[in-house]
Length: 418
Image (cartoon, rainbow, N blue to C red; front, side):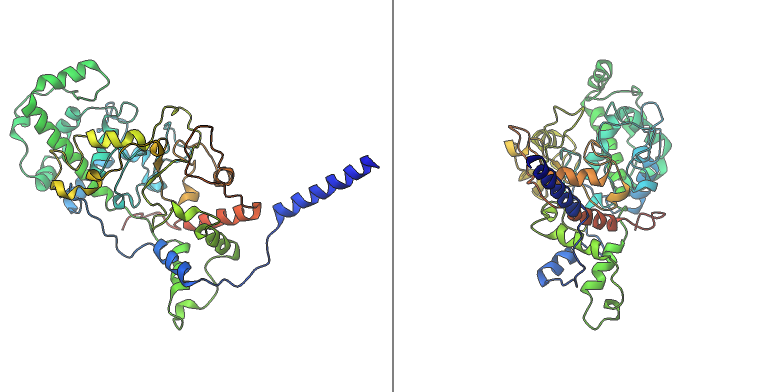
């Protein structure tokens, strides 16, 4: 009798599990509250982006953007003339690195579409402007791996006319001085650090000025890169149109499951909107998710990023910034290091998320399904700080979230800029 009872109970549990996995509630008529409609409008791409960086007077300069575009694809901006910005930020792949690329990195490459609208840059927010961020990979020994003297000499000799058009006369001191091929205060090679020290303050300052202008040109180009409308954006237009508008009629542009996923996304139950809000589905802030980070065990995230930003000679308050000190509010009022910032990393955009695998900051997950299952459990290691709470969603709800996220993909990436 006991064995028979156990068989019956086991069968019942099996049936229940199958039901929960396959269960999908009957379709219902979607009704959006005024509050929900306001949230939906906030997620829609704007017709025009308003951006500003007081530390970069050339951000909206078309000639600076042209120079930046040329530099972005120029492999000469690397020690061995093999890597360009476009090598990892691939235009044909939403300015991220394709999963099947030959380039191997221990971190995920974030999209550049819409990047100019953020206030902080890098995984840990160690750069307070887009132009300051653009300089970091150039001297990073695992990325471009060159030095500022190499880049400055190359740009002044390869693009003299365009450089002068944007920034004025070429620096006579540099043009009349024989500079070492490789010299930088941040080089991993002692000899190149010594080369930098021997140059003297005046020449160092001139080199840094041109180097900063390289970053400002790259930023000007990146400020032209914006995501395009998706089926999700057109759905928002459909449901927020005036009642008698001809646009409101017809079949909804999202399926019942996609709409259900959107409902979950903006709900208190789904919690997604807490961090992934705004037109780029990112609040641009830093949060601890305690996702395992192989090869980055010492990663302290925003905790150390704050100090790096404050010490950066190319920050908003630095000598090479174009702003007045009072305009550097983000840096002046920066939240100083505290335990809650340990392991906190920048919230990425979710635009085109279905087409930009792998996921998380080190590419730990290969599919959206894996990501959602991680957030559904949201286990926190002992002693670690996490901003996550388990979603505790049912399988059909996780599926609804995933199909909704797929509506954030552009249908044509031939021209990903506006």
